[in-house]
Length: 217
Image 1 (cartoon, rainbow, N blue to C red):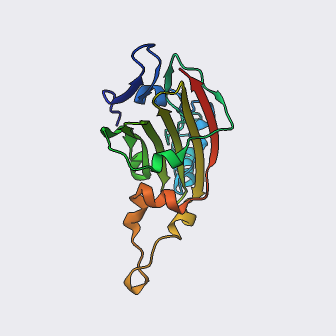
Image 2 (spheres, one colour):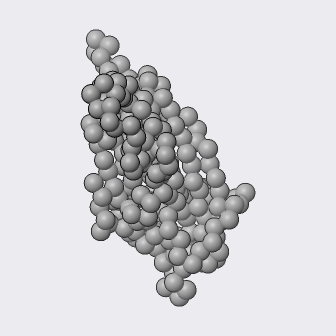
């Protein structure tokens, strides 16, 4: 489901420069190459393929292939900003300072249950403090029996400065690796509901690969 009317816009009024988070812009980055539909295969995919081969031999190719997991490396839509690679990342020590929260919001931009094979979701959280604002956009993917995937885009601006910092991180783990981190309940049962908890999956996965960027206002 696409929540097309939901979006986030952070803009400097004096210059019009800023950054937006929009569902359709994110979906435009989903892979539509000839092999994109085969990038991730569920456990029963081979059975479907064999059934189609025996019963529908006239169908030999996918007309409009796309990555059915909707994985997107969307980092936000820059408005008048030009981001470039940087050695300096976001100053998380400043973000740990207790401040009044002037504004907070979180929202889902798109979500899909992948034909009951998992979940694919793009969401964001934003908070504004007296010292600046911080945005976390997260793409979360769970394909049951196959993998977990998280793409994060973090954006930070300190008021009074002329720079916007952005970090983009990626991580991926086999489904069973994350499942093995489930806490045991009585009689060695596992709480499978935690596999729907994005925070649990985030903490269960290895350290991400992080790219640092910066743009000037």
